Length: 202
Image (cartoon, rainbow, N blue to C red; front, side, top):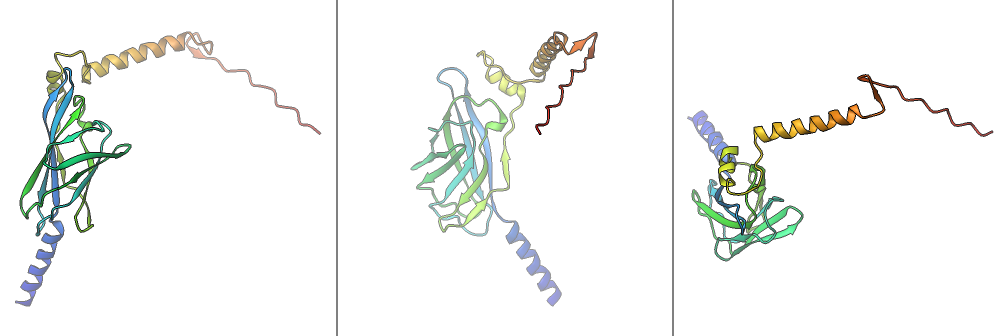
């Protein structure tokens, strides 16, 4: 009986250690025509064994949203701190155990790449506890999806075909440069004449 109690205790501790706040991100609207903007949504899910008290802050990194991005969660704002560092703050509500909270926001500029989404999420609890959100799921848009969004604009969307053409152009320019170089003669690189050593002053 004691062995089973110990096993139950270890399993309970393991469950408590694994329980954490998780997050997800998804794009909800993407406008390439003027005025350009995109809307997205961060979702925090409380998978811990207690409520997340009101008054928390969410820090994150991104260099691809406007410094004047707007939070659509009532009584909160996204504030640019420095460089690529932002914080969501204000009258942030409690997140009960087992429930989630959606944080919609809008930013100037169209969403162009999957790498433009917020990253490195840090949750600062109201009691000062710092929690790194490691379980973070990002919506990934395919090149075709981005191309469809931008089809009415001249904006180039990276694709395998466009990358091939760009690499071909670079190779052509490099070849012309090498052929016109005085160091290249008859397809071979010519050795350069070494300089005489500087005289030693007595």
